[in-house]
Image 1 (cartoon, rainbow, N blue to C red):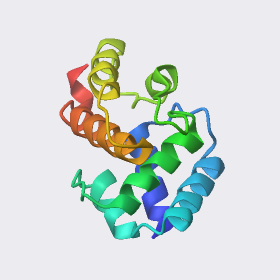
Image 2: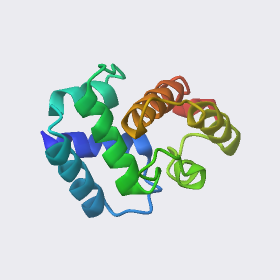
Image 3: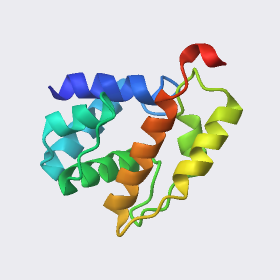
Image 4: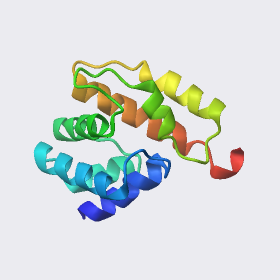
Length: 133
């Protein structure tokens, strides 16, 4: 199940990652293990776009963002990394608009911020089909 989720994460984030696939597998597995999140909740969020208000899921997303360099431990989003890891089917204007909209979302703590930003990015990205460039 972890490998399937890893593959989905790669597909949603895009293939222009600074990290290798091996590193991404490690991050996903470590974050699932450290947060004790249900792999099904991760799949629902990242594949189906159905985000359940679950603290373990929120902290999984924080862990993943921090591991990938998209966020620091305090919840500050690293805009350049978010942009660099955008799916390839998005053009620069689309990426800028999504990142600008989503990075501003706050939360009660870093886990909450990660959850809000991830939900926004996935929701906004899935609105744009690969043929809309």
